[in-house]
Image 1 (cartoon, rainbow, N blue to C red):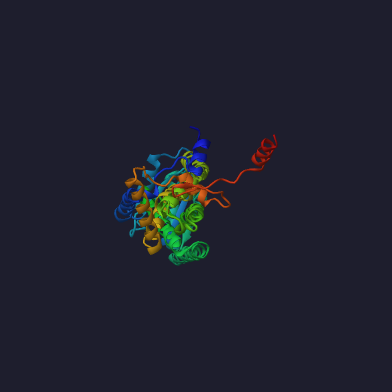
Image 2 (image 1 turned 90 degrees about the vertical axis):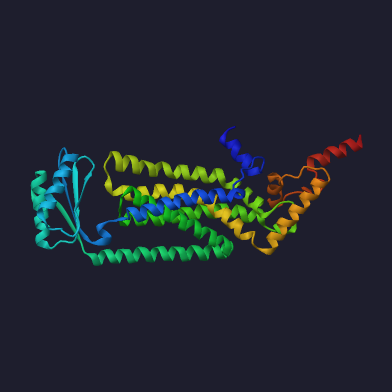
Length: 378
């Protein structure tokens, strides 16, 4: 079966994947991911960049830089004794650059470290770039990042509560927190530095996750409009159809988004050595993948659980179960409500569909009426 054919069958309800009805399974998967993320944060913690903690960064370009050079540079930095509070971090950027990060240094200590690095890699001191960031500037960046995150969450809650309903806002916020926590935890496990680019990546994945969730919630709202006026299908079944209808679209969008992000991460940062890109690319890659998962397997099942606690929705579920039990007693096969029936019932301007045990006649088309008139004349 082609992907296009599968998408059409999922949208029309001819094929239905039971996603919302298996909420406990997806919650268990999320619990495992959250435990791994928590373990990364507790055991390894986040490597905050000097933009947040303050410090100095030195970089030099050398031909034929290697792992041995990194080890030698690290030993040379330790020998200076200017950063006793924290061990300097020496990394290889690409194939021809060495980067050294230390704690806060005085101007005299900055000169000492620069000269030691220049002597070790065989360049002049003028060829060593130095960047010194004070702890107050790092604290300011942290406050601004926290403020941006708070404003985003407030705007998201207001938008969802006004456009949809507060239960959808709660489910979307839980999915957002789920995405950020897992992304941050994996970031800690990998050991990448948290930089302002990382914070930009976190804010970006929040927007992407919210977008994907809103697309699915829109289909759920369409399928569940006036749902309590019938007794053929439950809220969970209608919500499951909405997930199926948006499933292929969400996966296609995520794959298209992950391709360029993967290129930045694996080609740009890995092969070309563009170290400044890896912080942003890793956050985006993990966040987009986890955001797609949470929109499908966390947000909508959680929404269904919240809605099923409402008295009217719970009463609907009891009526549906009673109707199906009555069909069993008459020897019929109840099963679940056909997804196609839900899709047709939720379609604006749909014609009459089968309700209960009687089939209402469909409205005839203009061509059928003309054909019937000609046969009557004959």
